[in-house]
Every structure is written in C-alpha cells, then in structure tokens.
Image (spheres, rainbow, N blue to C red):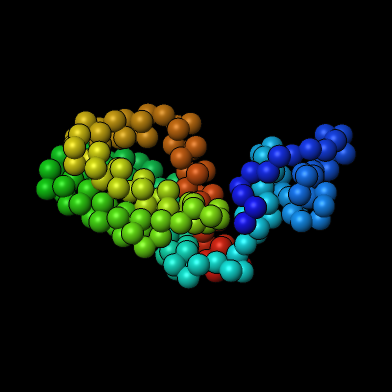
Length: 177
C-alpha cells in the first residue's frame, strides 16, 4: 500500500488530482474532504479481511437499526436512560459487557489499513473507553450523556447522522460490495 495520504498537486480549476507517483502511472488517487487517498486505501474491498467482513455484517445492521429506533422513539429512550442510570448493578453489568465486547473487537481486529478496518477498530476502542468511563465515573458520566442528548437537539441529530453513516457504510461494505 502506498499510504493513506499522498501529496496532492494539480489545478484547482480543472479538479485534476495527481501526485509524483500518479503522474508516473503507479498510483490512482481519490480526493475525499480535500485529502488525496490512494484508491488502494479507499476501494480495496475485494481483498477485505474475513474478520472485517464479518464485523461489518454484524455491527453495520445493528448500528443502523439502533439509529432508526432512536430516531423514531427518542422520548422513550431518554426516559429509559433516566431509569437505567438509577440502577448501579445494571450500570456495572452494561459497562462490563461493553468492555468485553470492545476488547473482543480489539483483540480480533486491531487493523488500521483500510476505511472499514479503521472504523471497526475505532468502534472497539470506543466501546472499551465508554465502558471504562461508566465503571470509573459512574452515574455522573451517564447523567452527562442523558442531559446532552435530551436537551440538545442539534447534538442528537448530529449523533444520529454519524450513526446512520457508520451503520449504512458498514452494512453496504458487509453485504453489497
């Protein structure tokens, strides 16, 4: 692999993108968000790791369905989280399960060479971090999350957009590529 980011040159008016390697015909580039990525990094789905494919198929639809459910039943989930934070055993058990699931992802899939691999690895680390925060900080951490998502509509919508994007992308990668 040539690397994630390659130096980008070219004319902004023509929209052409090239690099020293691309001009010699060695690398084809795609531009995402102003950064030039090698197509091997962006489009390398045909040779995807089996674990990445499995976790994309497992996590993608799950995250997508959770996002849809949150969008439809927002008030229900806010009320549920308010009740959830009052039960110390449930907080502990949930944090414990989240840490174990996150560690399972990290131990089986600590890969950082393609977009799907990075997303799945970040999800694993995020699960461990969130579970650890619930165990170490406890109720104040859950109170903060409930306050943020119940009062801040723009933050809730932004979170849903991220959930839909990640769930949709992983589902697409897992089942349709």
